[in-house]
Length: 144
Image 1 (cartoon, helix red, strand yellow):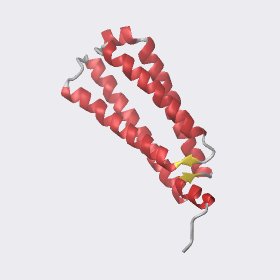
Image 2 (cartoon, rainbow, N blue to C red; image 1 turned 45 degrees about the vertical axis):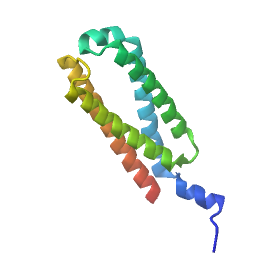
Image 3 (spheres, rainbow, N blue to C red; image 1 turned 90 degrees about the vertical axis):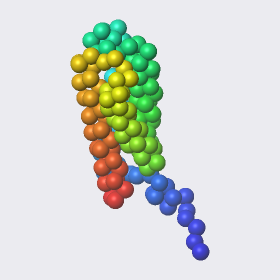
Image 4 (cartoon, helix red, strand yellow; image 1 turned 135 degrees about the vertical axis):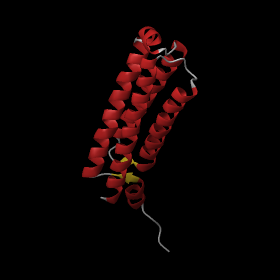
């Protein structure tokens, strides 16, 4: 019976190398775009309310949550070897965010304008693209 060393465990639970560097870039781009969007939601809640029909009771918490998510993405991307489980959580979070945005539109839970519907569905598409890129990046990094 053999016991895995700390280095062996780290190689199985984290990723490094060239593919991991590409994954790191994707995570950073996701983090920065999430931060910018969170700031926009917080700073422009009044126009968003009028143009998109997105009430402050929704845009402000969304903005705060996005800033928290952006910080988490930055931390994950900053690890010398990227933890697999954290990236899996990012992929799952992005996928759930996509589903939630589409559900908000389809259920009418928020009284969105036509522009607001387009805005939310565009956001869902962007989040889905990030989830896909991060999933593929993780998969490639794990097989490298």
